[in-house]
Image (cartoon, rainbow, N blue to C red; front, side, top):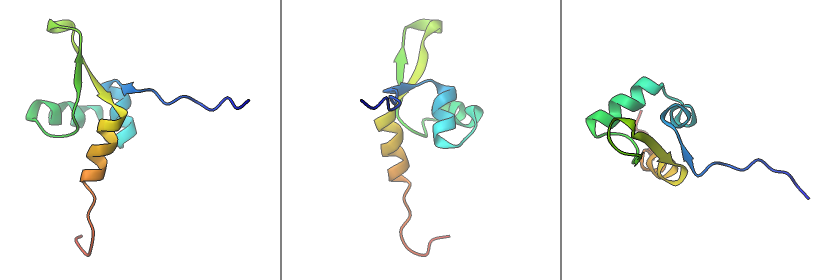
Length: 71
């Protein structure tokens, strides 16, 4: 039986930033500006934390695809 690592369904802001190859600060700024990937709130009020679903991160990355000679 294989013991392949299990990919989490959701990432914290820090882990999502690593997954995307950007800084946590950039991801937080994009969230405040309404840019970047979709996220969910885990909890309520000041204790709420942003969580990023892996499929939302992948979909957002796919939406950035540039085809052709655009440099």
